[in-house]
Length: 376
Ligand SMILES: *[C@@H]1O[C@H](CO)[C@@H](O)[C@H](O)[C@H]1NC(C)=O
Ligand SMILES: *[C@@H]1O[C@H](CO)[C@@H](O)[C@H](O)[C@H]1NC(C)=O
Ligand SMILES: [Zn+2]
Image (cartoon, rainbow, N blue to C red; front, top):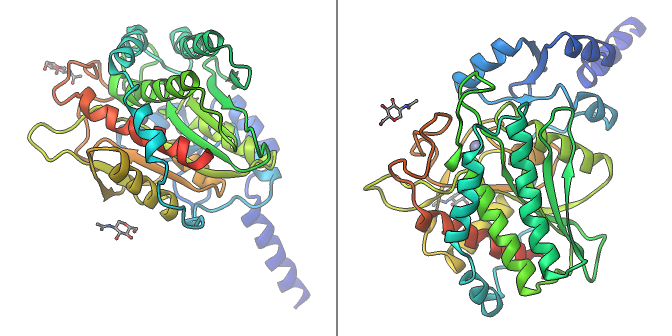
């Protein structure tokens, strides 16, 4: 009986902390990567080559090599069960938000996208990838400086690789300790297995990145001051296992930061020629209440409606937030599977068939509504 109990307890601890930290450090130093391919699966060690095999096969995973130690120190890894946030009130600030939507400017967005796609690639280990992050930081910093605002700040979030993520914060005027509202996009790009191949990444995820820059610009220039904390994130290294967003989400969890809602903006610039124009609202590994709210925002502020879709395990950065138990949503350019076929190739440019600023700007409207309605 005692032996049985001891075995049961051992099994319990093995389930909670299956890989000793010393092993993680040793294997990571040998270049191996620790990948989680499903919430109910133990993480597995893979070589970089095996990791790229999975990417080529479109198998979703979290590369947890960088975050495993901190995540373990927080206790049992939170399984990505659907977190249910309380229902959000319906959008109610149309008279304030609608005029701001008119200030969104796809001509400016196109200028920033041209700069981002001019880097050979925005791969996370490359100088060009690091420089692309700095471009975003400089662009935002210039708007903040020109506005004279001291309640808005932009900073790099450094990682163990050269490309930083970027975090722009609007300080809360009423309740600085209230849960944070987060808008996210990833700013890296990739082509195949190569760190050096041309990867313009115009749609994936240049579009989401410039949508967020423009919404932040409009809110900065309009003088909008949120009552509760508001942040915009541009994540590094999404394409190789959600590395940047995991670093940030785990840090927020460790710091006890609460999140009101997170909305991911990854690929907004393509609609299949001839097909009805819709937004693909991702319903797996997302929060039902936040997602329902995004659908209402589309009805209120956009000319396009959402349809439900699913994109699988760890398909974009919202997954990193869901993994830590935070309520997230993901609004995607089309139903998953009908999306831009040029992504992850040298052909992911604004000239690809189906690329449309008229489509993309509707996602920026939803982002602006999300930011305003949840923090005003
Ligand atoms: C979309 O998904 C949500 C959540 O699962 C569900 O409540 C809603 O009815 C779905 N909408 C449609 C049109 O199927
Ligand atoms: C890019 O587009 C060209 C012209 O349509 C095509 O020939 C080529 O195969 C495409 N390349 C890739 C990697 O998809
Ligand atoms: Zn993407």
